[in-house]
Image 1 (cartoon, rainbow, N blue to C red):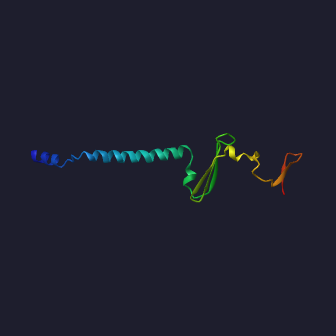
Image 2: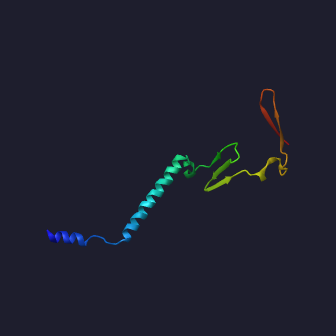
Image 3: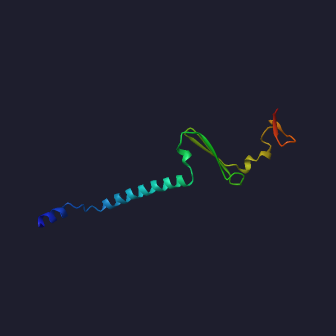
Amino acid sequence: MRRRRSLLRKGEDSDPMSVVSNLFDVAMVFAVALMVALVSRYNMTEMFSQEDFTMVKNPGKDNMEIITKEGEKINRYTPSEDSDPSSGKGKRVGVAYELENGDIIYVPE
């Protein structure tokens, strides 16, 4: 009986670095689980699909962002004070008229 116990004890790993490698594995599993939880929480599953899409965050507010995905490229546009339409850097492309029934008609020039 003593021989079996002594053989089992000799086979134990006494390397202190094995604990570090186990902690690394646990950290990697935690990181992947956190990423999956964040993606599902914020409904960002479109980022991983093959379809192109456009998403507007905080529409109409000062911190509005427009995020577009075209193929593998993801563009992020944040309107700033420099892109103010009244700054005079654009050109007139047409006229819009509102009819009596509320319809709006755009007439390009």
